[in-house]
Image (tube, rainbow, N blue to C red; front, side, top):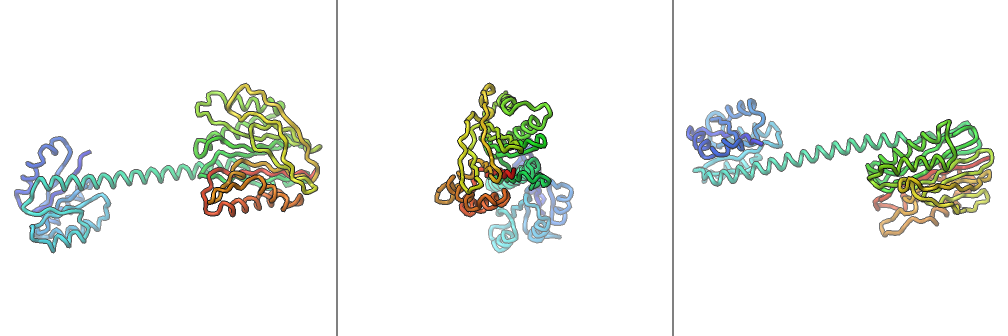
Length: 390
């Protein structure tokens, strides 16, 4: 990178001295010099050479002196254009004024060219540092913009309309995802497979941030594709196919814990597959909270041949199923205390079985955020709550 320097001096031999002294740097295209004899001419040269990075200017010049020129230079508000002022050794008042007006440095006459070269090098290094910092800032802004777009895309993939099926009186459902970073790796989804079967899933990718969000998007999309298909097989068959897809060529070694269920809306029976996920809670109509004793399985994306088996449990009319990711129970406050499963149970009991899923979720999130306080949220928090009316 060639640094272009504007030298402003009314002494006729200055151009020759600079050209001679810096001939090697000029030959190697390290420096390129432009010359002017006063401030007025220097402003014209700057208009013609807008890539000038450094100005080396005398203070005492005809037509427009160096201090006036420095003020004009500041009016251009270029953060990468720095001025080194030149004046007589005993002209300290003008040198002080120049520094107060924003000059980066100064040298005194008669010029010591060794000192001048050191000053130019130091000034150039400062300019390059400013440019580097600006590039890094621009890159961070671009990354943040990309993350904001990714957040919008990820959030747009999640269901937002609640209640999701307002024409159905036999069940109610509400879910939310609060990411620890701009984007997260948790997921939830649901769909009516037909008039009598409700599919739902909640999951947690092993990583955080952008990589997890991409894996989350793939997982959610492939599940929706399989379970919305008219040719959908059994829950074991379809989860096995999804697992095979996620496990194949999984060089990132990410995996997804998930709880996948199909609720028979006519009987209340839920057939489910647990892929290494947190145990759901059931708030029974008699205001008892039950931890589901689930049939365990391996997280998705680890072993393409893992033989998933399903389990069943029954929701009675008035029961509420509460599913969650580990960000709920692992939420920490500033003293390092975990929110824990018992607090979740207490909140469910306090809400009673008459509470609707949105009310339960809103109350839970409020309690978690109050518990966390000023501590940083280190994991995604996701909940899917399903009430069965029968």
